Each structure stands twice: as C-alpha cells, then as structure tokens.
Length: 202
Image (cartoon, rainbow, N blue to C red):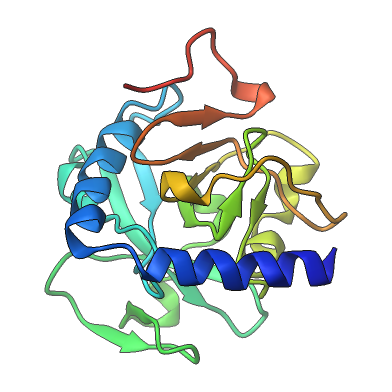
C-alpha cells in the first residue's frame, strides 16, 4: 500500500499543480458553495481550514463567506506531532513552519486543541466515493483526530479537493481516520455515516 500511495501522490500532485489559474479560481468559488451547503454544517464555533500549498484547492472564498458565528482557524504543528489551531483573519501575523507553510503567529496559550473544533476542512491528495483519503503522508491529521475512531464526537472532518483528484477506490491503514465528507468544485461526497438521499451538488 505504501508504494501504491506513493505513486498516486506523485501523479496527483503533478496534475494538481498543472491546473490553470483560471480553473483554480473558479474551482475555489464553487468549492465554497458546496462547503457552505453541507447538510451537517455547524451553526457556531471554531472551524479550521488550511493554507493552500503545492497546488491544493484554495479556501479563501469559503473563509470570506463564513457566517460570523463560525470562527476561522488555521492549523499549527505542535511539538507532540499533532495539530493545534488558532483563529486567523487576512492581515494577521504569520510565521512559517518546518515545511514552509504559514501558521498564525500566536502564543501557546492561544492554541486550540483538535477537540475544540466543530469543523475541520483538510486538504487531500486523492479520495474515493467512500470518503477515504490519501494525504501527504506525514500523519498529522490522523494523529490529531485519532479519537474520532472511537466515537462520533466533533469535529466534523471534511476533505477538500479538485474533482480530478477522485479515484475509484483507496485502501486504508489501521491508523487512517475516515472523513465525514469530501467537497470538490462539482459535488459533495458524504460518508455512509452522514449520507443523505441526495448528496450531490449541481
């Protein structure tokens, strides 16, 4: 499975980076529509996105359209090799983490735990219709939300991707944490746990 996922990562990342700028912008706008129309979207609380790198689909349109009752946060790499989160708005301070990805410039006392979030939107490299995902391989999200494998406690975990990142079927390792949904610019995929009669978006 390791070799299979490694090849898939390389292929998908190359294809993702090759998408034209106009395609990216349009996809980000359509993705925002689908994220905001999730049937399980929380009414209030802290929600996390990510800083798009390496050709990932952007969340800027979604962030700007969030209702005031939902506070947008970005992830921060913690020393225990799991994630913490902090509120962030455009113009606020940022620092680069070990991978060169911007994070909010905050003190430890301002950090929120994974359990404090009501919704986390995370990037995926590839996904299937059952909401299984392949990430970058570092395991940060799986470690952070391992508690979700024992219960259906918050937060809601939603993958974000371009439609071209959809594949037929993915295998999962014991440590992989399943997603509740995946949103692309074209539709919403819901896991069987949260499935509805109509889970497609125009």
